[in-house]
Length: 205
Image (cartoon, rainbow, N blue to C red; front, side):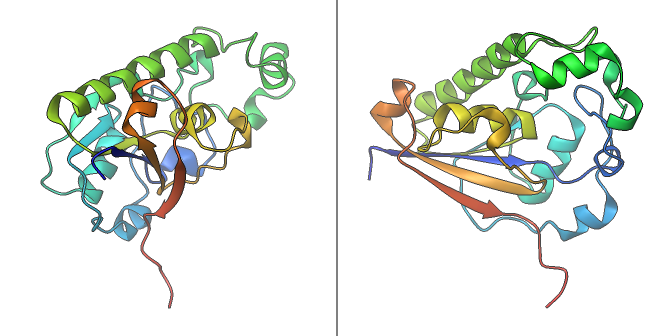
């Protein structure tokens, strides 16, 4: 099994801003208290732990992996929504720039925010840093605590079944383990299998 490598992608727990459905990119918001209380430390073992440097991801990583050293990477941040940070669909609907972005995010971007190409290139750079650390430390298993958009992008690029960015459902407090052959991972190929990993403790029953 020396040629098998695992990278787990975990989305941070629900925040207060997520709860009101505000766009939350480079701005931050505290985790909902009930959600935070529902996260139990993971029993799965990983050699390395990475996190977006956003507070909500750092906090989630600390709940999942208490006392484990983590490497914070700004490249793993969510998309920067610029002037739309904190605003909801109800706030923005009817605005031409917003409607154009919803229809064609590849050719439109939030005012003062990131274009999708910039977001993709940044996340790919972060993925490259994760791989570099894994290869340097000869680590076969790594966990990454990050954001919904980042996970959707990486799944669209590396999941065994090809699906578009918005086709992936990535709930808060949920994860995916991508299992690669080492050489395929080095070459930027797709993983051989994908396993879902729920993080939240059951509140009932």
